[in-house]
Image 1 (cartoon, rainbow, N blue to C red):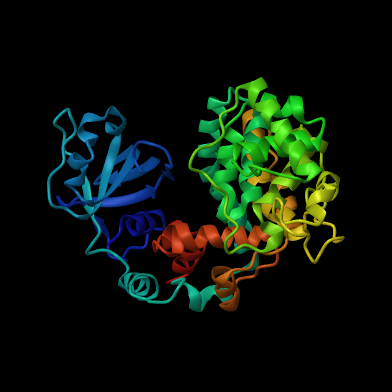
Image 2: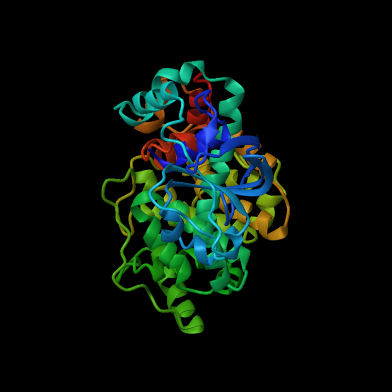
Length: 428
């Protein structure tokens, strides 16, 4: 028995038809099972239970074993003083309130719908399928998935903004500085995300604001902090970067990062750190107040500020400092729609969501609209879920699937999932 199943049994009253009795043989009539409590305190509030000839109103607490009442410290918590019924799977100990009064206990292990238990064990616990509900996916109502995917995405955002809130406090509520750090990480992708983020954190955002007038100044700042500038150079462009960085380093007392070096390994040339940093510099040269620009946008994908991002002339024909000209020179190195989508998903939307909460505004519908304009992400997990019948068309679906797999399916939290909950609820 699992605690989530015990909650399900009580919430939907999945018991045998035989009358219920307390462990002291008093008849139990459930007039109102109560409202589930997602906060602290008893599991169900505002219940109405008749025990014998007396009607009680109050809370219901659920445990796998009655002794968990003491293990969880409820006997010391006044919030549990109004519990009128203790519902347990196994009654292994008599429970009393601080007043000394015994709490009526209902043991369910001999009163539960046996067919439902067998179905739960077979389809959710003992199955080796991933996800456990695979055989039922195609029969699930479409509106159920559409509603659940939105809740899954918001849950995913809530997890992400915990780190955002901590960092925001360290930045004295400078939202543009926070977004810059997240965008820097996004430009670095998986291979260089951490080093790019540390670069963004290595100087005050006020430095970027002051130097955003020219892209070359920002390039010098970014490359210099990451120790990427060549020691010796003959090219006018790289010479100017070295000179600019020497000036910035002295003016702002900058300390280059130690022991952190971006990698070129296992990357396509378009994702080389030299190119991505040049693009990041162009973005903030053109739009230093990026958060304000994004908040006023009706559609983030294809946003004008993204379309305008390219690279300086040197990086149109090079991938490395002092390296030979590339064979693809002349091809504009802009932000592709797929790369824009990654930036929006991993950097912009989490910060915009956190900012909306901070402002006290609900922009969830706008967020969902943005997600539905972004292409479906492709990876092994999402492809598998599509193959078993999940309807997936946009990034909203793929983000929801990733959250579903990691937080529910892998952990077999089927009854905390709207889909598993629906499937078991249909069992008669």
